[in-house]
Image (cartoon, rainbow, N blue to C red; front, side, top):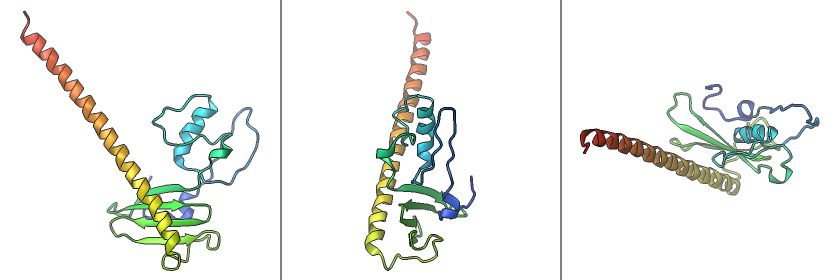
Amino acid sequence: VGHGRGNLHDEIIHIPLVLFGLGQKKREEKCLVSQLDIAPTILQFFEINSPKEIRGKPLINNDEDKNHYVISEGYTYAQSDEIYAVRTETWKYIRTIKKNYVTLYNLGKDPKETKNLIDEEKEKARELEAIINKHLLQEEKIRMQRTLTYEKERIRRRLKKLKRHVSKTFTY
């Protein structure tokens, strides 16, 4: 936590995922994986169904449902701004929200992310920006649902407490 704050370049976010266990065949895959995929993968490994709230996908024996992109999230150094990246096999688009600073890299040609192509590849930038915007809308929807669930539970507890209080006060 806090490592590489303000930086969503591959030297920070591209980390190997190693899984091993009895009965598992040795294999190596080079594909996009989100941290959201780790929990459902572990559950699948132990033959436990994932709860519907889990957003990731199991990785074991799931060749037909590979990620076409992954989203990374972070904060700038002073935690004053949110930063998002969308990464495909070939492209990476990074955007800070408040400053609206954007970068675009062709990872096939520039794996060290040194040349910002935002001005040269406007169509690709719009395509990847749309993915980030969709992600932000989904995250907001999830936050609103969690808030609503929390509020319903809080009201239910208060009503239960009020019912106990009323029944103690007005015994017939």
